Length: 178
Image 1 (tube, rainbow, N blue to C red):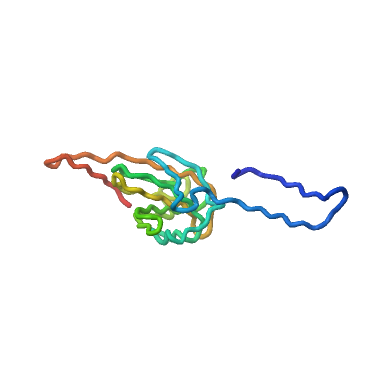
Image 2 (image 1 turned 120 degrees about the horizontal axis):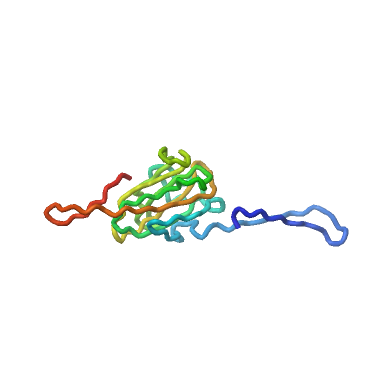
């Protein structure tokens, strides 16, 4: 379990002593790759970690280079809202980057990326992305780190309903910046 300290006793039989080798392996998180992205919904906050994850070369550059540090994936289906995804939280303990993609995992299409949200009250090395989410479109969010950094984080997804205006006919507008 992440954050738990485990103690391992190594002893010999009876009074036997000698050198030993101790090896351990940590499994990557279930959402280590794009195809296994964990679903997240509007209004949700999830806690995760990139410590045992791997870097994802397919992410490429999306507002910032996203291939140098371990990362994990989340997905959600758009509903026409203005969406904000952020790691701005006092519980996030490393310099994060975010990338948002449409398309497939084999051919991701960059929508928005961020390294360092300077308006984040919890610290300037955390990240936020905002965009309009088309209804029915699957969006994939990569949480990764600056350089080769990894750690634990809190990812929050908020959605603001679009504005309805009357321009001769009812029109729905989603305003925001990427």
